[in-house]
Amino acid sequence: MDLAGITDLLAAWGEPAYRAKQIFGWLHQKNAEDWQEMSDLPKALRQKLAEETDFQPLRLLRRQDAADGNTVKLLLELADGEQIETVLMLYWRKDSRDRATCCVSSQSGCAMGCAFCATGQYTRFRNLSAGEILAQCYWACRVAREKGFSRLTNVVFMGMGEPLYNLSNVAAALSVLEHPLGLAIGHRRITISTCGIVPQIYRLSQWQQPVELAVSLHSADETLRRQLMPGAGRWTLEQLMAACRDYRQRTGRRLTFEYALFQGINDSPAAAAQLAGLLTGEDILVNIIPANPVEGSVFRPSSAKTVQEFTAACRRLGVYFQLRESRGQDIDGACGQLRKGNQRNGDVFRR
Ligand code: SAH
Ligand code: SF4
Image (cartoon, rainbow, N blue to C red; front, side, top):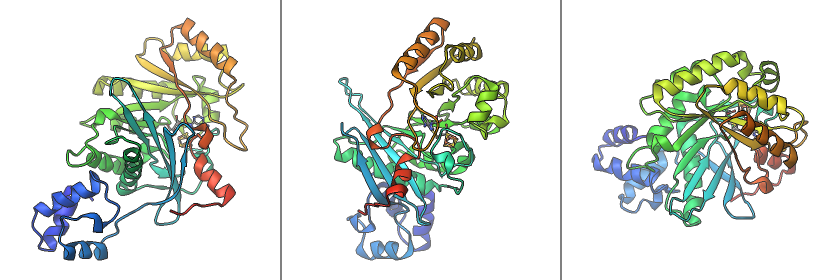
């Protein structure tokens, strides 16, 4: 519930308006786990809230901490029994610009069917509500606080699902995340990742508060990309590039492309040359990511040697890129894997 929603509810109950801000702060800034925690509210009001509202849209099923303690994966259950995952990544920096990034899901599963993606294997899926998106951030924020961070600093929509097909709920969640009485995470610290839904990129560029946009490219070869990413392959690379250029021009924000390296698929020097060709004259940073292995998938991460050769070719060809670390492989790293592991083992841990 946003501030207007809480205000309306309390007005209908004949409660004073200032209570709405109190409740909003408890929910969205202090991330209370229960109405009873809200110690400055009258007991009768807490009781009424508990009876009349559904407090927690997500139940924590399982938590996995990476060995280094800085990546934590959370498996969360929705009210309808579907499961989603959320990842918290902590980056400690000497200059006190520490980052606590929460990677959230926007859908339970995904209809885009990317061949290399564990989430794409789930055909049953639905959009998450704004509350379900926010509740993921709040679970992550509680873990971040436990680890010594005062707050979350960044949110990336790189968990399960395609956020641009759930844009209105994503927008509603962001307006609460950005609220000064909430976690106050500004739009510059929000990244939305898309497989490249062209009409929705045009829609996103109309936002008054533009966010960082990441586009999953993975191949600069039209035919190969369509095979790898059948959902996104509805649009040509030319259409995608035009939408990206439009986003850049309208918002003034730089885009990033994601390029995961899969052994023998998109990691040859020729593939690097195609990438360089596509990006000639564009101001786009490419995040080259060693792929995450997905069990039962033919897509394997490229070897360290191939990654090195691919990046060397990119450097020679003038591709503007950075090689990203892959986090949390020891806790079932990639997209969709935590839930997959959970279903395989059936060893659901209940809090
Ligand atoms: N649906 C959106 C956002 C969620 S996926 C999108 O596709 O962009 C987040 C990122 O994980 C995307 O870049 C996606 O391509 C990537 N990804 C999926 N499976 C992967 C794997 N096995 N290895 C590396 N990256 C993967
Ligand atoms: Fe969906 Fe993104 Fe996975 Fe493709 S990579 S199936 S768009 S979540």
